[in-house]
Amino acid sequence: MAIRIPKPPIPGRRRPPPPGDNHGNGQVALKDQAEEVAAGVVGWVDERTGATGFMKGMLFRKVPKGTNWFYTLGSATMFAFLSQAVTGVFLAMYYDPNPDRAYDSVQHITNDVWLGSLVRGMHRWGATVMIVLIFLHMGRTFFFGAYKYPRELNWVVGVVLLVLTLGMGFTGYLLPFDQRSFWATVVGVNINGTGPVIGPYLSDFLRAGPEFGATTLSRFYAIHMLLIPGLIAALIAVHLYLVVKLGTTAPPWMRAKVPEVEQEKV
Amino acid sequence: MADHTETERLAGTAGGDGVSPTRPATDGAGAELAPRLPKAKPAGYFEGETMTRRALFSGGALAAGGIAGAAIMLPAIGFAVGPVFEEKDFPWQNVGPPSDFSSDNYTPKSFSMVTDVNEAGKTIAYIRKRNPDIDPPGSDEYLAISTRCAHLGCPVRWVAPAQRFVCPCHGGVYDALGRVEGGPPVRPLDRFKTRVQNGQVQIGPRYSVNSDLERFSARDPGEPLDGLWKYLYPKRFTVPSVSG
Image (cartoon, each protein chain N blue to C red):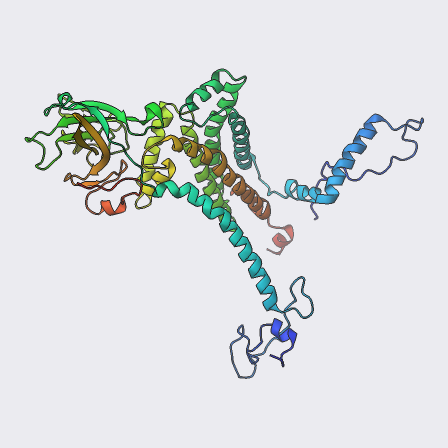
């Protein structure tokens, strides 16, 4: 039986309204005009990009029976990342990565800027939420066996994303530049330095020198708001592409239904 | 070459005298079970084109892209990694006249380890005069011990009644010479070079010691220096080597 894919709510090219549909006085209703304009814009873009086909393939792809709320954890993680990206961009408007002024600028954001404590709070708690969601998503993938062939590569990409996100947590922790974040970063860099052979050089790279200095803060800031987010965004695109390409798995408790014809043979 | 047709060359049989690399060179009958089909022509193929020309252009495009990418990435990476290979100067600093220090107890002295981060760049060293009773022969006139714990870098405190350095974070304990007595630290407390100039005790670059108090260039906390460990945690380019 052919599976019927629902039509997307995207209008096609509108035909002119049939005669008699214009309230008898030859004028087109405002609502119809508005619809005409919207459909025209969508149609114009679609004709030049083929976006509808792409959206149809992505949004109306088949999912296995038994798909449940656990399958939303990946999207939840992505929205946590988007929330971090948006709040982070706006925090950067007030933040000053200078060791003399970093702490004061964070205090300014928290106490003086309108809604500053809310946006900073979203970024601060969103970081924790994102880590929690990643591990829940990872647990779902593991316990549902969704990492198995042919999805191993997506698991690997996901692990890289996990490590990058932990790197975001590590580099972002320094930015308030209070006693706690300073010493936590000193200890974190020292832990990193205990890696044999390359550890000491990696520590020097993170600090931009043998000791924790002024460049360390701006370096962490650049890594935190440009380098790692760019990598994460690119890898999320790869991760999503593979999800759409390979499809999702059914939960392990779902059994393949044997067609009735074969049952009769048995 | 002249006696081969274009199709044969495309199929990869050129110059092979009829023996394709994809087929074992069996001379016996029955080897040719399936008739060989000419390979499909690649997209954009035009009559008279050779694969060599196509390969040259693909390779050239890739090489040009690679050179352009390298021209961007190499300077950028070098820019970011540069500080790893740059030795930082550590100026000698006055910490007080010799009368500030005794030979039977440590005096804490604050000074700037890093000059451009204000209070965060300050650190404390415990300094005392050489004591022939406990210091090994040939050691410096003044002993300056870093407060940075050799476990993960927390600040240790000198507890005079116990004659021990104690770390508040994870319970590292060091004796009066800075050698590990207990807890997680992996090597003795680091030290600073000292000298007396113009009536002032001066403090210089930091250096590390192993459990025999042999000197090494400054290491980060958590990096052991005994036995083979010193090869796993080599000297960094950013710190001066130890001399005398």
